[in-house]
Length: 491
RNA sequence: CGGGAUAUAGCGCAGUUGGUAGCGCGCUACGUUCGGGACGUAGAGGCCGGGCGUUCGAGUCGCCCUAUCCCGACCA
Image (tube, rainbow, N blue to C red; front, side):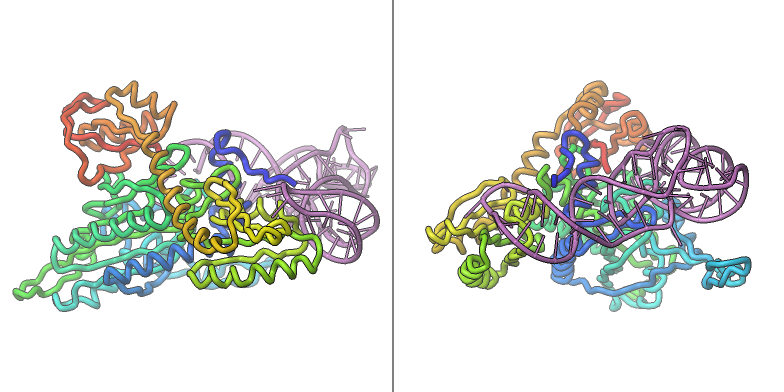
């Protein structure tokens, strides 16, 4: 019986995959590139969902739901949106099956061909804007601040659990505004919500910034994003918020009468985060013993393991543990008493570490005798004997301490893996040998960015808000530049 | 869509020159264990991805499908 989690240093992607599967988060599905989220993984997603949902509602948004299927013609209405999304989509062409006339099995009934194909949504801008057209006549109908929790499908050629699956769960906010200023404000507001969620709940430090034209969402005027660094030094785009200008309003002919009685197109935003956040969470904190979950999102925050060899002993321990469990629960903590009798304590310890449970309390004869508990924290793996009268407060504080500690650790890691490069040689060397974020000058053109991408596989992750201005020369072309931007290889 | 690989028990794999299927883990029962991934004994579990062919005989050889994985192009 071995844990068989590959070491991070040896093969990062294998380590990641192993962890996702062994920790009971997800499996590869029988359907190509899709995933099965297991209950434990889903519990984490549910916690993320609940926190985000509350944050959206606190910023004035409401939930709604739109169709899974989108008529093909909707996609041809916004020109650049077609470019970006017309390709890798699942397409429904028929609506009926029949028994195979030549033998056994079921075949598609060719007589049941759809007049117009339906596209399984890769994102919902088009169907939502088609709907908004009917909702908006006057400035009094604005703003519309709607969010949708849904699944979407993008038929990617290369897939990876959580990071890029063919089907994934996400939320997409779609807002409509009377003015450009208000829409832009909304775009910034939501990227700030994402950043706050990432840092305060996921304990993942992120950089907020704006995407370059190359990396911009298809159909957007501007794309804001949060970028996180994984433990292999690669960047992960963790959330985006788009200012769509009037592009979709024009494409779907959504006009409103302003206060002044003038007819104008409405201004739009869209923003989303997905189950990819699960990947970020895993890759940002976990170690070779398994997951390390931030207490604020852990499905189980405290696990209590009894150590005993006779049934009476267990009963005795349970008697001592139950009041503690209740006390901790009354403080809002989720506590599990792991009294499974077919497993040894050592096995349970390893399993709870694999699952990333922040705090483990062990209770055995020794503790009963001394009136103590053994408390182990997942982030540092340190163990401490705590007197019974201090245990509740200790465990409560430890939750906050772990939350803070793993954030600090990730922040430190990012700082240690962020470099400046002033020449192209230096730039490439850092990418190959150290990885991480490279701050470098760039001449501001798409052509140069594409060139650098082709030559080094690094892309501009974002231009951070409040980026310091600095005179310099583009590392690739030598042309003048006014600021450094963040380059990195990414997922 | 190119290039490579794989498909055998729930999972991970072995299976020689073709002779009718095995190992480890897990699972079930009982017993001993229990402060860092225990052990013994006894069990259960397989249309060898699908189809066609070669052969007395195919997990093994040939052809054709299909699916999955890895590397590219694409991407939250």
